[in-house]
Amino acid sequence: MSESTGATPFESKLQDLAAANPRVIVLPESQEDRILKAAAEVLAHGIAKIALVGKAEAVNARAAELGLDLSQAQIVDKEDPALLERFAAEYAKLRAHKGVTVDDAKARMADGSYFGTMMVHLGLADGMVSGSVNTTANTIRPSLEFIKTKPGVSVVSGSFLMVLGDRVDVYADCAVNPNPTPEQVADIAVSTAQTAVKFGVEPRVAILSYSTGNSGAGPDVDVAREVTALARAKAPEVPIEGPIQFDAAFDPVVAQAKLPDSAVAGKATVFIFPNLNAGNIAYKAVQRTSGAVAIGPVLQGLNKPVNDLSRGALVRDIVNTIAFTCIQAQES
Image 1 (cartoon, rainbow, N blue to C red):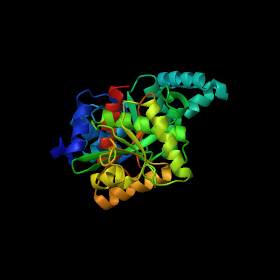
Image 2: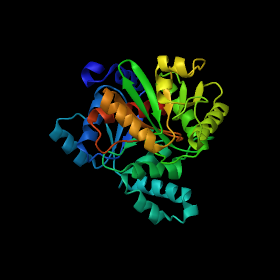
Image 3: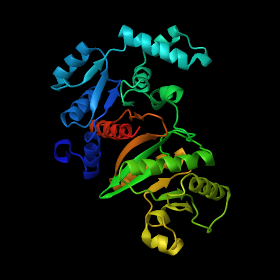
Image 4: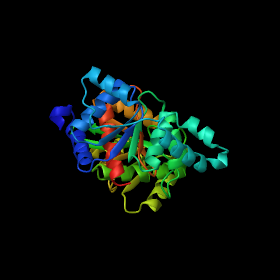
C-alpha cells in the first residue's frame, strides 16, 4: 500500500494490519474536505469500513465536486428520528445521575462527537476518529462520560508512535494529562506498553527522569522511582526501568556507561514522560529535528477506541489514525 498512499513501511504495516480485519470507523466531521478525502482513500485500499455523520445529499455532492468515490461509505444523519430517539434515551439513562433529561440528551446528540461516540457505545460503529475541526476536549469528553476507562485503568492517555527509519518508539503521555499522579503515570506506562504490543513493537519501558539509577536525588527522581515500582507491580512481565535519562534509555553506548546491567537501558522502545509538558515538547522536538513521522495521538485506556486528530491534520494523518483505530477495534 505504501506506493499508492505515500506511506512509510511502518504506515503501510498499520494499513495492512487494519485491512486484515476492517472495522467500522465513524467520522463525525463530514463537512471537512480532509475527512472526505481520507475516507475515500481508506475505502479504496480496504483499510476500514467508514460511517460518515452528515446529510447524504450534502456529503455526496461535495464528494462529487472533489472527485471522490464514497459509494461504499455509510452516511448517517444525526437528525434521523429513530436514531435520535434511541441515542437520546440511552444518553439520558447513562447521565440521569447528573440530572440529564431526554430533551437535554436530544440537544446533546446534535453534537457530532456525542452522536458518533454513541454509535460506538451502542455497537453501530467499532471506533471513532474526530478532531479535524473539533477540540481535543470536545472529542474526548463524550468518551469519558459514557464509554469510560477499561477495568483497572485510572486514566485516559495519549501516546505517539515515533517512526524514524526502521525504528519505532512509543512516547507517552503527550496529549492528555498535564500533571498526572505517580499512580496515573504507572497506569500510562502499562497502557503504553500494551499499545506497543498492538502495533508490533516489543515493549521495553523507560520511566524518564533527569537522573539514571542512583546517580541523582530529588523529589522528581523519587517520583520516578515510585512510578517504576508501581508499574512493575502492575505488569511484572514487562521490562521497566526507572529513573532513567533519555540518553541512557536510547543509546547503547551511554547505557553501558550509566546502567550496564539493565534490560531496558540502551534499547528502550517505550518512553514515559513525567508530565504532559515534557512529553509534548519531546515528541515535537524529535519530530521536527530528526524527520521522524509522529503517528497519533493514540488514545489509551478507553473501553472502546476513540481517537483525536490535530486540527492541522493532513489527509495522511487522518488515514493513519483511522488505521490504528481499526487495529484497536479489532481487539476491543
